[in-house]
Amino acid sequence: MSLLITAFGAFDGGWNCSERLLDALEDEREALAALWGGPVAFVRLPVDTEAIADHLRVALAAHRPTHLLLMGQAAGRAGLSLERIARNDRDLLTPDACGRCGALGPVDPAGPERRDATWPDLAGVVVKLAGEGMPVALSDDAGRHLCNQTLYLALGVEGLNAAFLHLPLLPEQAAEGLPAAQGGRPTLPLDDMRRAVRALLLHSRRFAAASAAES
Image (cartoon, rainbow, N blue to C red; front, side, top):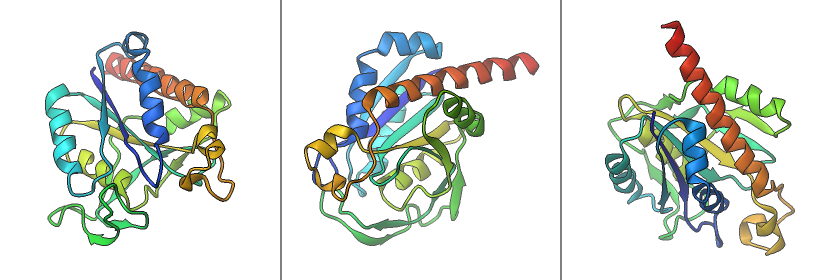
């Protein structure tokens, strides 16, 4: 199995917690590859609704992963969210990096209304993470911003196991007074996010091995 993990760049007037998490994960690339049981690659995506399809296409062509874990910032959420659904709609309440906002139409005019996440056993992942004391839940609302758009695009790739992990803000974002953190929004430490990703990958590897043994 091969894995691609992505994050987004600057967004909502400041740096993006998903990019900080990606930096931390990339620092332990070899350990993650050993945990996953195969190669792990990392890509940073721009918060650009018109360019994201091309950037995702290039990343997938370059790394050819069997599994894709997308990560993004969800200011206001108190815990981690694993998204089960992506909708064919773009309605940006917060401008993207190029200033685009508002109702921008479908992600793919020829695509279905929704697509379901293809990463195996997301419910089992949530049980695993919750059992280790992490704040986590399944979600049926990935929003209508780049997070939802990128997941929708990824789920249209045949044979790709894809999921989206939404992240709360980091304490450092609140301490710096970034726009996304205004109003006392919840935060989660970086070490907890790293631990969650490691637990997710280990569970998924074991689930894949068990499924292969049964077949």
